[in-house]
Length: 630
Ligand SMILES: NC(=O)C1=CN([C@@H]2O[C@H](COP(=O)(O)OP(=O)(O)OC[C@H]3O[C@@H](n4cnc5c(N)ncnc54)[C@H](O)[C@@H]3O)[C@@H](O)[C@H]2O)C=CC1
Ligand SMILES: O=C(O)CCC(=O)C(=O)O
Image (cartoon, rainbow, N blue to C red):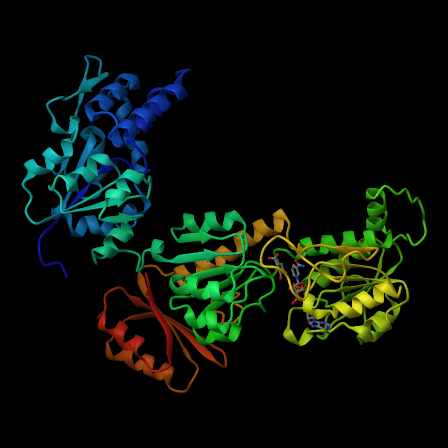
């Protein structure tokens, strides 16, 4: 509740708009000038020198206007362009400018000729706009400015604000030197460094608050706003070198994102996760129950990969933390590596290559075979297994597969009803089972013994699925003619030293868990997963969540959305609906999905309602998480 009168004083360039208007004017006036780029750079440099206080403002203005070579006629084009360049968060909170119209001023060292028409659309009349004015020559050319105007002088905003004799608290919102000096001079009570468009170190250092957008300003001041919680307050931590596109995408949407190239240990993660809302990992970070319990604000864990067994999905669910992954983005990459390895193994290519690296010429056809007509046994006929089946057939291989689920065969692949049946006939056995803990040591001594003598073996699934010692023994004894291994029972958190018993064995291809590590796959994951994160944070959608009831929600327009995650115990829904009824809320839509452990109910309401209801809903017994979205 605001008790004392408050005045809001806005800067114009790079605050209310995304750009510096004189830079835009230069683009217009110099468009046919061969030295355009050079002159524009000069103008930008001079602008920055003025903003940072390196040269006097009058000097900067004089020099820029001389370079501009502008005419009155150019201003209408400038205004047209500026209309499209209003800062996004200002634009989405237009109601603020209506509701507080008597308390809002613009003080700018720009020019009224272009500021007035832009801010008029935000209910700021000309008499509340304090800015410079141009001087025009006989043919309308801009030849200078009114040098008597205090705003054309160094530190002019201080004098301007002082002369206004405003009553009550004065908050200045701006991006540069001329704004923060008003606070230093004592003519403003608070200075907000506005960094949505540009962030200047000197300015942010002097600020009472940094506002990365207007939502943050409104939030700090407890003012009505169009976004329930400023996105910059939502912290996203990305580990394990997630593709930079994910960082870019999430930052561009307004979140505060930190990216770390390695995975963190449980201890490190417990420390780091306290104020994190969204955690992004790949296969090397264990998100244990202890980590989840330490994560007071966590809403989402996202696996930027297929596997999710490194995450305690149950603990996440119990704490109302939604888990997403990228189930298809790297499928093709794994399949291509498998195809390459099948050929390389059957030709002993890596062995020949190692020999020649060591100075030995060994031209031989022994043990070198075509893949055409050979039997490929795919164990695990899921997304990867099926795609591999198609590509291997295209190479002329005879494919058979085994899966614990009843899977329809693609192409001419033959379904096997037992693993042994497949092992007995396959020239190459390739594992693509999922990372279910039940698959620990799924493939061991017994399975290797069932394979054809001289067959090849590939594991691109998970290290713990194969008994490594049994594999080593099968290779050493000559039972297997070769193997390709990408995944290991224990893998390091970051690049560096690594040891496996498989090192040094002939015709064994070893790769450091790179089956899904292609530029294409990582780029696709960096697009897919952030979309899931944003859909959940921004609108509550849980489509494709791995551990949570899936709900696809319509876009909320002009409604407030209550998102309530609760234990699935009898009576919770009844209590929620009783409270909604008691407050006589106008419900536009309600969506519910449950699984045996949790219920997720979303209620869309008209914007006007008694806000007391929020606390009541938060306190319903069995509530795990509750948030309001608009
Ligand atoms: N090396 C790498 O960089 C990558 C490894 N992967 C791993 O590849 C594996 C497969 O991935 P997707 O095909 O996407 O998974 P998916 O879930 O689509 O397919 C797995 C299939 O294995 C079957 N299955 C599970 N246990 C089995 C068993 N004991 N015997 C026979 N079939 C069994 C399932 O019924 C399912 O059809 C996963 O473990 C995944 O983590 C995935 C991507 C990259
Ligand atoms: O490279 C990664 O991030 C892990 C790939 C993987 O194993 C998966 O997607 O499950």
